Length: 422
Image (cartoon, rainbow, N blue to C red; front, side, top):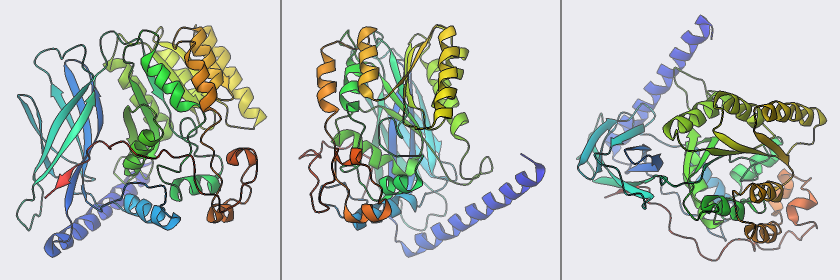
């Protein structure tokens, strides 16, 4: 970054922080903003727990329903993107006898790292860290009673392997190569109507159980914004996709980056940190060919010999040059003793996983069956945004615009607690 760029970024960052501070002070005087602590699902070992979260104005985003209109989806997405953080809020984290106080940054994000005095039980995978707001700058009213409970996932000592998966165009159909489709999928659909790739839920459930019926942790690494975290968690629950720790991005403006700190560097850093945190755990890597997952995973394989069992890349591109580039990467990774497969769908990856003993062969039937599900016809406004909706997206035939959604489950499991204010 040039000196001029650094100066401009510094000035822009200061301007954004000043504006946010002025807005927050005005709202504080008016008393118009209830506060919430939003914990993100954390991860850890039997001796150390990691939890990330954010302190925000509570905009009362509603949970997704089958009957939600496009305008309701747009309203909720606007609330997510137009989040109002509580800068430099102070939060107390409690786990058993351990108590830690942390201060959020200018964007309201905070991180908790709890040292466990004794090894946690080997047969328990989920733990709760209690969070409480203890103060924040420029407070003009009595401190509200704001608490939340954050979940941390700890893999057992007998875990077979860990899974590190991309999200966009790997688990969720985002269509990052088509800006119109990506806009439609991002803004006009909710957790109940966004489509998973066929067979993903069954495949990931099989991977999580493995062939030893233990608990294999899944980590989802994406360049999506933390602002849509609740949407993603709802999506996982509605579609019965195993939940795991999510690593998303702050797409705000800071002195370190302008809007986006870099897809590749973000993923490389997170994945390497996970491998370092769990040094005795081998991993499977799952991604797609649309961005730079093959290049990122190649670097991880080369930097961590013996740690990666296999790499699955979903082929979502129709570009011969890109396919050749990925083929070259596959050859280089193979020299290092790791198989990287470019597969057309989930079944291709599942068949290899069964062959290698990562999942039981009995799971293949369920994955095959699930591949034919989760087809939804486009709504009228979606057709206007994307008139070239393919037959594949609507189950192989053009369905009437009035056909109601039929692919969502009837009930939604309870979402992890995201914080309460009284």
